[in-house]
Image (tube, rainbow, N blue to C red; front, side):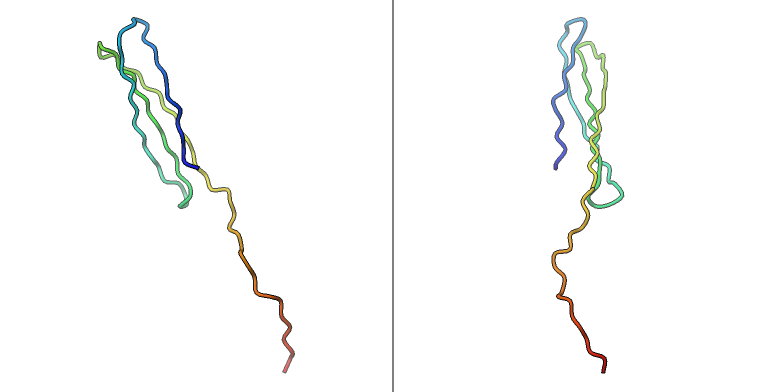
Length: 79
């Protein structure tokens, strides 16, 4: 599955307008199917005050390979 972040929310105690932005950083894992995505949210108000918060989603590979088909068993006579 693809990581899916929900929308963060913020409030400002002084009631001023603010913007809420984010930046994602992807970090590769130990194998091709593993990685993590860290989203850093930044809320900045009209006075230039800012706060940040982060969330990380780890994608891990827990599925073993599947052997699709094997050749049939056989018997070989000793020459």
